[in-house]
Image 1 (spheres, rainbow, N blue to C red):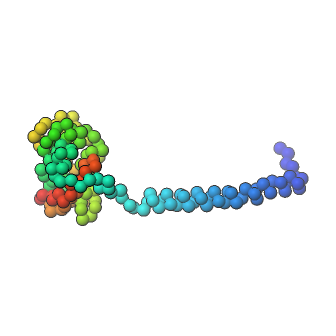
Image 2: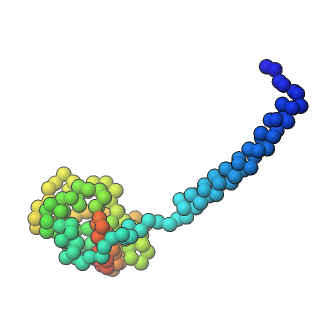
Image 3: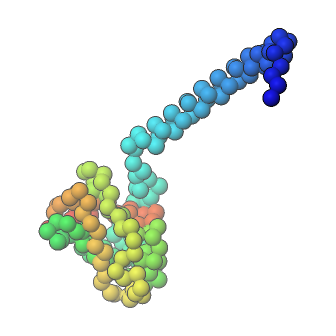
Length: 168
């Protein structure tokens, strides 16, 4: 390997580096700022609120939209589970709720905003729901968030039903 030590070659390389230096510095600052902002958004602790973008409905409105009438939300299994019971009023719409993970019911504790949701298929995922049939979901009571008397907001798809009182 031959290294050219002539002063004019060394000066040319030095000038090229000095012309690039501001662009490199600006690029590094840009990456640090964008990276810092991205990290702040990711780790800010802000939770996505599943209620955003939903429509407030009555119990009848929820039944009309998703084919289920909520009959009971209660604490069971020594407080470790939430028993969510519903009666089918429109089998086609209710079957869509049962077979579409995006439509699974989510319960938000109104005073703490903690969300409880199913993460996998419920017990009835292989079953075709029948008109008038009563079915249930069991959800873990994570962090003991729900108690008898708690008020919950039920979110299914783009609808929410507020002030559902938990039974003991």
